[in-house]
Image (tube, rainbow, N blue to C red):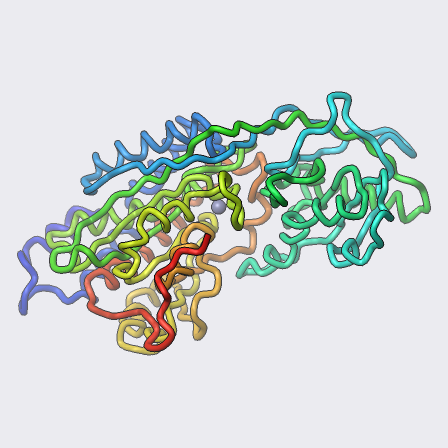
Length: 475
Ligand SMILES: [Zn+2]
């Protein structure tokens, strides 16, 4: 399906006054993707099949990066390179949990990423339940001495994923808040929207170089059960075991590839996604599909008979899942990229990341200066036929990996995906290839290819007219 489109473009030869306009080319890219381009699906299929889970700093993450670099070269992308950086890797090990009073029953849990192990024989304690993290924070110092704190907050299902942002502080900050009050361990109702007997892992936060107590996500039905027992007035006592460990001298890496611009190659439109995944599934929707979408979009642009004016750069980041706000030695791919490329960031014209599964794109958001101009109107005309709206607000959530780059002053864009079901599977053993919907994957590629092409072939300055970024990368 792709070939006739490209032949048609080639007939126009070098684009000039008689060649197709950028909008026509964007529409052709869209149609080529929607017609069933196979690159994205075969990418995510091969990635998840060959390497399975790709935890940050692991051998399989490194092998996947080597494979991705070779694949990007074979697809015809240029300047393909791997940039390595150090980090402390975390290894789950074996883990288990059970209710030991008032009855005995197994509990389905998953240690939160970066969580320390329990003693070899496990630990046990009475559970003190807090409806929200705010309630835990209101508990008096020392009031949880010898206890296991549990936050039972439910995540709200919402199209834009707002429920995640509301619930995730319970995961990142809960362990330290529990430890400060004397707790020996921390339990969290999984940050997820399903009701299956699986737990949603995810990273928690280092405080002064460590996570202070063992911390676990509970499957939603197990959290329900504990709450119901407590509501009967009975004491809930649990036994927890984790054999987690750390690898202090691990390495991760970013993979970079380009379609070089024909007029101003130093100006970069950055398309990001992360190559690492959690360890329990195979990282298909988080974030194999993201890497597939940005790669396929760049490949479609690469195969045009003429290059865009600016460079399209694909960055497949390492170690996104363990991103820590700061902390030397616990860096992640997004931070490493912004540091390594600091001198170039003034020439990055736009940056975005695909990291929200495979459901369809329903809205785009552009920096304020471009949100109501001709660029936005052109993009809307191209994307309206595939069900994409325009946002009247600048992007607020543009992905963890590009955040350090955006904080250094690079304007972000967002192609928002429908998140109604994403958090049923996110960070669970159920994140596997069969969840990928090929038609929706193609629609994502269409939106990314069109936006990337239009931005790269334009001379639009997306930076704010006032208060430009200082170009500094935050530590
Ligand atoms: Zn992700």
